[in-house]
Every structure is written in structure tokens, then in C-alpha cells.
Length: 54
Image (tube, rainbow, N blue to C red; front, side):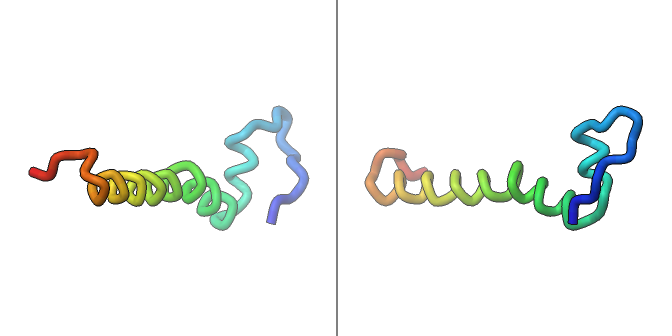
């Protein structure tokens, strides 16, 4: 999935540019998983009554 970096300056973006699977894993790790975490955390707070329902 990740091949050796052949760029002159091997950077984070050149590693992401290796293929769609690497980009997908990165985006899910940085964006989607925290959104799921926040959703369930807020849901738990609402069930406990910490957040007033509108």
C-alpha cells in the first residue's frame, strides 16, 4: 500500500499521493472517526441530561 518515497523532498503530502487507499485511510482517521466519537459522546450526554434538549 505504501511504497518507498522517490520524491526529492519526501513530505507528508507525497506519502498521501501514493494512491486512493492511503488518502481514504487518512481522511477517515482525521475526519470521520472523530465525528463518530463526538456523536456518541453528545448522545450519551443528552441521555444523562447534561445538555438541555431544545
